[in-house]
Each structure stands twice: as structure tokens, then as C-alpha cells.
Length: 460
Image 1 (tube, one colour):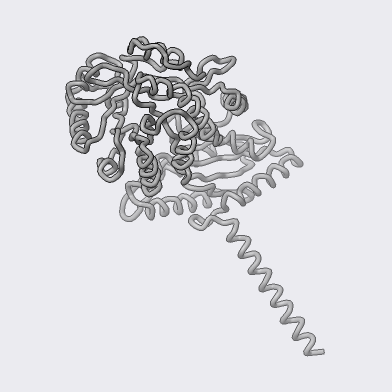
Image 2: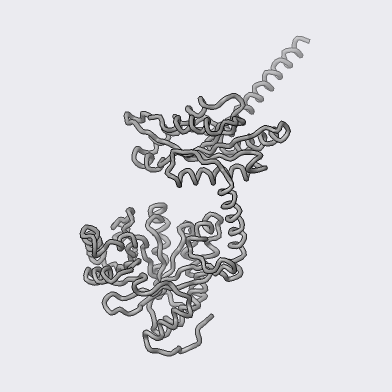
């Protein structure tokens, strides 16, 4: 019997050891490694549990979403290690702020959450804002981070965890838009905005296959001759109820929903079909299309674009693909592969928004980029502000020395056009010459300017 007892004791000890290991593994899986707070997965489960308990008890649940203001600037200035220390310290402060029964989580990056039954929303938010603005010493430097808060309430605002978090996020975005270092609580205005966005989302999903997103065109002008030598393709949504919508009204939402690729492809195919006869009839030389940074992060983007181009009548040498320099910063190696693959097929690559603060001449020296487009923010004061004019002239000189063509966009006044022409800018576009227009108007303008009649019927 003693031997059996010993085995039972060993077995019980092993069971306890395995149970402790299981609990540790589970705890680690639910914990953010940097702050020691619960992570996003555990937060989601905890929120659902608290809402279920509140349904039974009739209690209110308040969800606070907390986000540091200008954390990226601090991170870039002080370094990632300093940023991590800042987040770890904030995690400690939030843990100290939490009361029994409350749940504090790090959702990712510099975003945190607090789930509470506290009904004093204003007072609690005020204490949190004050806590977020307390100075911190990091590697011998004192920083005052500050933060913004969005709040949504159960059951007043939402009946489930997904909507509650979405509404708190909307309130957070409003707090940041108002300047930060404040709290915003979800209300009727945001509810109406949420309903409007939901309706617009459903309409956008329907609009793409229905062909309501259509290409418009803005002419690109040769600075020396004044001739229209190309067109930039721009998206417009011909909404059945709201009329014509600019990209600002739907492209950000399309990016969020993952619909931008479908829009880009539809616009590309329609634009190539309309513009191919213009190139064939020598009305223009170039068709310039913008590409979403999200599309560019697809390793197969350039290969797929070349395949789609091959299915159109537009020559590769007539196509320009516009990319932003922020994409180059995200993944230079992938950008190089895309640019080199496109250039090998004769496709021109243009660097858009040049001069917005990221511009780096090394991109022009080490990548086969043939064109840069000066950002419209530089053009606004050119010809009127001596310092801006001198800066733009220097950029034009540097680009020309590298054999790169320069296009200025956003030209709206004669003074701008005269200065850019005298400074050696190759091409221009903007309202001074023509606004974006639908394909039929663009074709009529091109044929009238060139005094030609169609060699073939335009493809509709």
C-alpha cells in the first residue's frame, strides 16, 4: 500500500505541474509581452463576457479606447526602444488606474482599452487625460505624450461588442480630429455618420460591378509648345442619388474595405479602352494611372499589371504608372522589383507627390524612374513666394541633371505656368489648362485641338 500511495502522490504532483504549465501558457497567450496587460484577443473575450453579465444585471458598460497623440513622431525622434519604454510606462499607469473588476488591455501599437462599469464618464475621462499628460523621463529626456479617448456605452449606444468597439473608435477619431488631448463620447451625430458610412459601404460594393466608378481624364500639357501630350486618369463615382462623387468621398473607404484593388482594375481597363484610340491617332503620347500603395505591396502587382495591359490595345510605352514615395519607404526592395519589371516592358514609372517631405534624390539615382510629379502644395506659392520659387527651381535643376522629366500638377494661375515654363519644367497640368472631364469631352477636346477626325470609332 505505501508504494501505491507514493505513485498516487507522484501522479497528483505531475497533474498539478501540468495544470500550472497549462495556466502559464494560457496566461502568456492572453498577455501583451511589452506591457503585461491583456492583449487584443483576451480583451475581445473579456468585453463579450462583461456585456453578457450586464444583460443579466442591467448594468452599464463603458468602453474607453485610449490612443497616444503624435506617438509616431516621438517614436521616430527618440527611437523604437524609447517608444517601447513609453508604452510600458503607460501600461503601468493604466494598471494602477484600474479598479477591481475592470479590464485594461493593449490593443496594439499605442492603442489601449479600459472596460468599466463606472457611470462617471466625464470624471473618469478627465483623470485619464491628466494621467496621459504626466511627464515621463526616457533615456534622460523628459517627454509629455498626451492622449485622446473615445467612449461608447452599453446598452445606450450598442448591443454587441463589435459595434461598441467600432463606436468607441469613431469617438476617438473625432477627439483626435479636434486636436487631441481630449475625450469624445459617441452620440447622435456619430450614429448618423455611422449609418451614412454603412449605407455608403453597401452602395460602393454594388457600384463597382455596376460600372458606376468611371475614369475621368485631365490633360497634361507640354510647357514649351502648349500641346496636350497626355492625360492623367482619375476616378469618379457617378452615384445614382448623390450625383458625381470625387475620390475623396469613396477612396479612403475603399482602402479600408479592401475594395481599392477592384476599383483600380476597373478604372485601368476602362481608361485603356477609351485612351488607346487617342494614342493610335497621335492625339496624345501618355496615359498616366495612379496606383494604390496597397496594390503595390502585392508582390505580383507588376506582373499582373503587365498581363492586363497586354489584353488592351494600349502600347506599354504609352502607359505611365504613378507611385508615391511613401511606398518606396515602406518596402524599397519590392518597389525596385516592380519598377524594374515595368521598365523592362517599356512602361514609364512616375514618382508622384514629389517634394512633400519624403523626397529623396537617391530614389531617382538608383531606380529606373523616368518622371517626377511636383506636388501641388509646392506649386501654390510658386511665382509669388521667392523662397518657394527658388526651392522649386532647384528641384527642377536637380531632376533635369539626372535626365528625369518633371511634371507640375495643380497649376491654377498664369503666374505659376509662366514661372514653371521659364524654370524648365517639362510638363504641367491643372485647372489653369483644364479640369478633369469624362472621356467623351476629353476626346472631343483632343480632336478639336489637333484638327483630326477619328481613324476608328472610339471604344465605349
